[in-house]
Image (cartoon, one colour):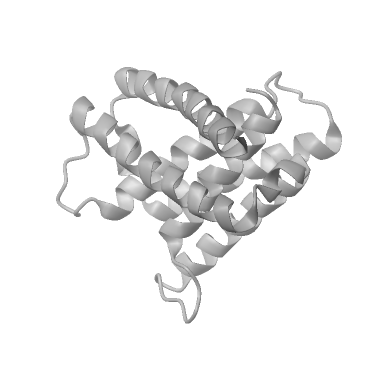
Length: 180
């Protein structure tokens, strides 16, 4: 029962994120392709840090709450995973249908990971505080930054892509808990 509910909730959150991503692609094209993966990681860091600041201060001076920031984390993580897999000679401007297909492929991989982990962890995320989810995202971002600083080399740790996938899932969990 909980698995089906999680699938429905995941799909609803991602549908919202995907719609925004595709609308922005129509507005801006794939200008994000100019960003190096490390720059995308820094954008994710900024969003996660803003969420933590808003959680602690409880006031937003620019009028936007945490929901758009979690959505941004999801979409930037998708961008980062696409950037990691595209060849260096890929065009900066991607065809809209390719962009949509890449988005859907990355999210399908993330969803598969979510259900594999949910099986093992028993949906423990449902009992977590949103602030703890934010902290886990920040930790994952710092891990990615360290791996990037080490030119992608790890001794025993999962790679960059796995951390981006986890950040997407944590952001989905937060959005579910905050009832996006």
